[in-house]
Length: 169
Image 1: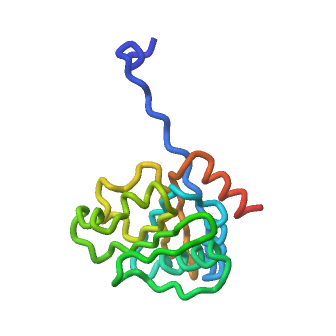
Image 2 (image 1 turned 90 degrees about the vertical axis):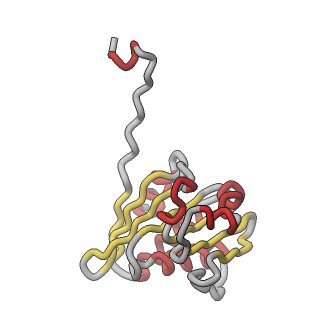
Image 3 (image 1 turned 135 degrees about the vertical axis):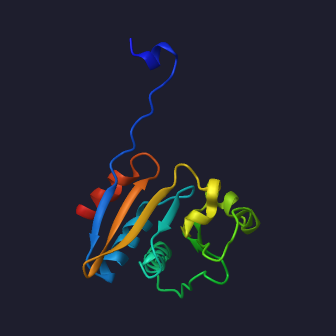
């Protein structure tokens, strides 16, 4: 018998392998946003990570427009902090937490409640502190050559596999 099992400890399951996607152009980034729009559902939280200019807002705009099913002005929530949209069957909350200085400020925005009922897109999720939902999908964008690389991890069971299938066909 393993020592941990004798002590009643349960071994943690390893995290699934992250999904790595090469995004050679802005069109590829928009395509990823559209693919996510088809897969995300109420209660899914997408944490968008990466440096300024990495494409977080571009991806969020593409996702929101695809979910709405039409072109719409999708402003960056940098100054308003949160923008909400009514997609068919659910709300979308797009938050940019760059200007927050303490995780307690997230509570004032109502984000914690939205995590359970809406599709939430959160830029600068490090500002959430311990309020980041444990089952959130993390998407990190980084420059790679002339394009960027998307690294996705976490999310509800099966979401990364669905996204991989949608992306690779």
